[in-house]
Length: 323
Image 1 (cartoon, rainbow, N blue to C red):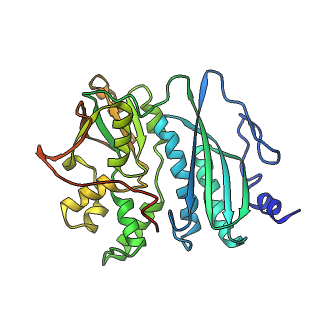
Image 2: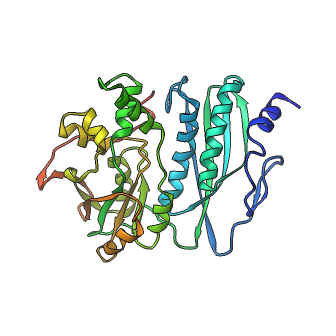
C-alpha cells in the first residue's frame, strides 16, 4: 500500500459509524448518499491555509476544530442539519503525532454534530485543509441573505470580539498581564460553537441570516447588498464578553472589535416584527441580542444611543490579514 493510501487508511477511513443515508463512503471514486424525500441539500466549501488562518506551529487540535466548525457554521446559517463532509488536506510531511491529535479532534467534533467524513484527498505540500460540507433541510426552508425587509429587526447570537482579541495575542500585537486571559482568548479564536440548532429553529422565523466569519460589518453588509436594504446599528447593544471587557479598557475599542472581529461564527439574522415574540422560545438555549433595524437607506449607519458615529470600519480580509 502506498504512503498516501496508508495514511488515509490509518487516520481517516473507518473512524466513524456510517450514517444510514450514506450508501458508499471512502474507497471509491465518489461517495454515494441518499437524502430524504422532500429535502434539499446545502453545500459549502472552505479552505484553511497555514500562514493565513493559523500559524504553522498552532495546536493541531485547534486547527481541526477551526476547520470543521467554521464549515458547519455555514450550514447553521442556512438552517441546515449537518450530514456529510469531504476533506482535502496537504501536508508538508507525514507527522504521526500531529495527525493523531488532528484526527482525534476532528472526528470527535464530527460525531458531536452527526456529520460523517465520506471522502477526500491527501497530498504533499504546504499545510492546508479544504472541506466541503453538506447538510439537509426541508424543501423551500433554507435561510438566505436576500430576505431582509425594511423594518425587520437585526439580531446576533453569542458575544462578539473575542476572536479578534485572540488573534492579537497569537500575533503578540497586544497582550494582557493576565496569562490565563490570554490563553482563554486564543482558545476563543480557535474554538467556536456552530449555532446549528439555532439556525434550524430560525427557519420559520428569520427573514435572512448569515454567519459572522469576516466581521459583523462585512457579513451584515452581504445581507444588505443581497436584500437591497440598509441598516441602523446601535453599538451600545453589541454583546461583549467579560473577557473582552477585561482585555480592552476603552468602550470604543470593545465596540470596534465587536464590529470587525472575523471568525466569530455566530449568527447574524433579521426578524420581522410579527415574528419577534417567537424568539425567546425558539432560541431558549442560545444567548441573542437585538442590535438594530433594517432601513431603506441602503447604507449601514452606526450610532450609540441615537448619537451618530463617523467610524471607518471594515471586516476581516484574508488577502490582507495573515497569522
